[in-house]
Image (cartoon, rainbow, N blue to C red; front, side):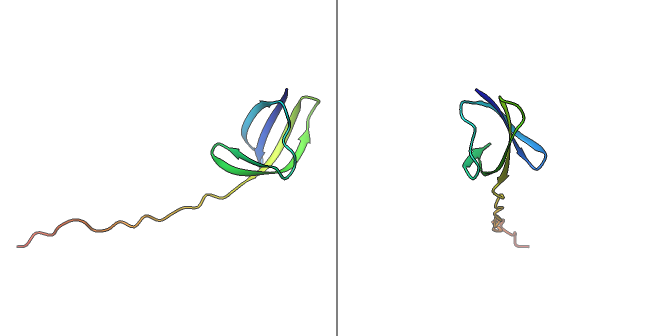
Length: 73
């Protein structure tokens, strides 16, 4: 079992105990977001730091239609 720390820049995203360490270029899903392993840094024989890049979140604009009825005066 290996202690794997997933990092984006210097922010820790996730720490897990895994049986296999992910390889460079591998596609992952972390917290529901797609990520790609960019580098792997062994700290000691059981601990690894894995640098990942997350896919940017696409923001969708919601169109709000005016459904209010105007009163006649």
